[in-house]
Amino acid sequence: MRGKLIYILLFVISSAVAQDARSILQEMNKQISQIKRVSYEFYNQERIDGKLLEARQLVVMQNSPLSIYALMQGPKKGSEILFKKGVNGDQVLFSPNGNFPYVNMNLDPLGSTIRDNNHHTIFELGYGHFKTILSKSLIEDDVKCKVVNETIFDGHEVYVITVDMPYEVNTIKNLGSQKVREYAQLNGLNEYKIMELNDLDFGEVLTVGKSYRLPNHYAKTIEIVVGKALHLPLSIKVYDERGLYEKYVFKNVKINEKVDAEKLNVKNLGKA
Image 1 (cartoon, helix red, strand yellow):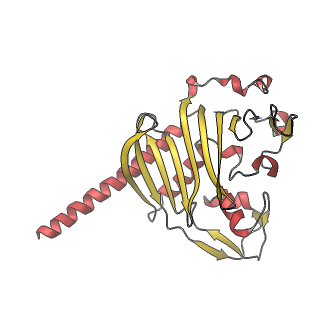
Image 2: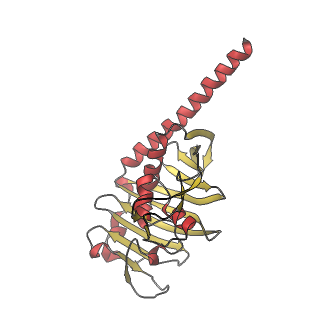
Image 3: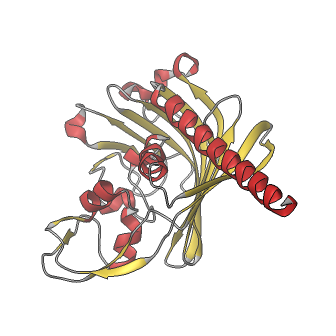
């Protein structure tokens, strides 16, 4: 009888912790939804052709009208990009500031040039992308969330939460004809992972009647470090069947009225 009571208590405690993890992530998503403008120092690692490539940049974003600015800290330190919805034909303004190709350019935000050695487009910068992914995952019963630690990260008190998904890669045929990006967004998947599994390029279309290797979830595990005061992610690690696939760290995060919006002014591009 005593053993049964202990088992029941452990089950209740385990359920409470799991619920706490979901509640923290839901509160995080709610906070992300309230962001109108954000700036941060962005550090990322992404596995490209079997190697983890690193980049650092300063980012400023505004939701409406959608505006995105990034100043590279490495590689190509000093290069800048600026996208403003409805301006410049919705092309990205690129200022190399002494880096190759040495002249300002207009780039397709979904094109291969700006996406070279990157998993995502500039539209996935910020928190919105992972908010969407987690919103889809948190409503699924077979997705397990757990607070694995409470610690200090970059000077902030944080929760460390893991989101485990029943991830697998299957061969699927008879998909409707649609671009890889559209299929990934519709199903909450990683566009680059689908491209990688099927040797596809940016902008390619999934062909009717052809077989493709496709994951059933965004990742095997996502580890999220959530600031207790900010209620925002300070670190996101994404794991697939081979290990670490993506890592994103957000430092010196400022939101809304605390953000200097001058970087979003076209006239200031090239003056970094």
